[in-house]
Amino acid sequence: MSTKNSRKFLISFSGIDGSGKTTLAKHITNILRGHGFKCNYVYGRLEPLMLKLFIFLGRKVFLRKSDTFRDYMGYSNQKRNMVKKHPLLFKIYFLIMLLDYLIQLFLKITIPWVMGNSIVCDRYIFDTVINDFAVDMEYSNKDIKKEIDKFFRFFPKPTLSFFIDVPENIAFKRKNDTPSLKYLEERASKYRFIASEYNMITVDGNKDLKKIKRFIEKKVSEEVCLK
Image 1: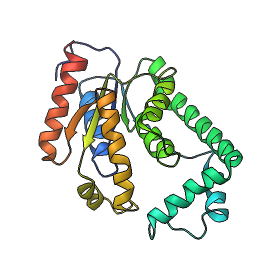
Image 2: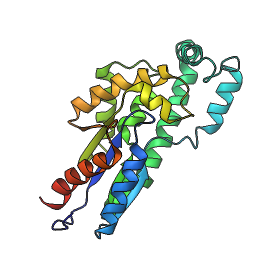
Image 3: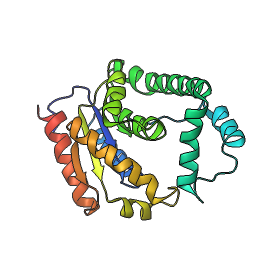
Image 4: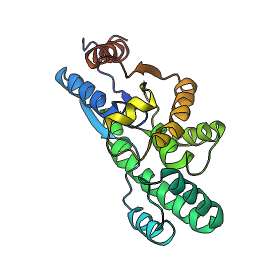
C-alpha cells in the first residue's frame, strides 16, 4: 500500500451482526496506521448512554412479560405496539435517543475529523438508522434514506463504504448474542437497499477471510493512496 496521498478519509463497514465488520475495520485500521496514517478506529453505531435509564424502565414497565431471546417476534411486536399506543412517550424516547447519538457522533467523528484525523467506522449512521430506528418504527426504504440523508447534512459521508453481505443463517451461527434468525432477516433486506442506494462496495463475507482482507486492502489503496 503506497502513501502517495495523505488526505484524510472516512471508511465505514456495515452489515448485519455476524458479518465480520469489526474484524475487517480493525484490520484496515492497523494497516493504515502501519503506513503512517493518523487513523481513528471508531464504533459508529448508537451506544445507549443517556438512553440507558429509559431502556431499563421500558423493559420493566412495558416489556416485562417479553424476552427478546425466548420469543423475539413477540418481543418485537410488543415494542411496535407500544410505539403506536404511547406516541408521546415514544416521541420523548426518540428525541433522547437522537440527542444521545448526535453527541456521540460529534465526539467520535466531528472532532477527530476537524483535527485532520482519518476515521475507520465499525458501523456508522447506516447501521444506527436500520437497527435503532427503522425496524421498530417500521420505516419504508424511502424513510430510511430520508433519515440517513438528514445525518449527512451535519456529519461526513464515507470516502469508502463497505457492505459485508453474509447469508443470515451463516451470520446467525457466528454469534451467540443475536436474538434470533428473524432479527437478522428483518435487517438484511434494508442493508441491501442502502448498499445499492449509497453505492457501497459489496463484499461477500462468506469467502475466505484472507481473500476478503486482500480485496478490501486493494480498494482502500486505490481510493485513499493512489488518487
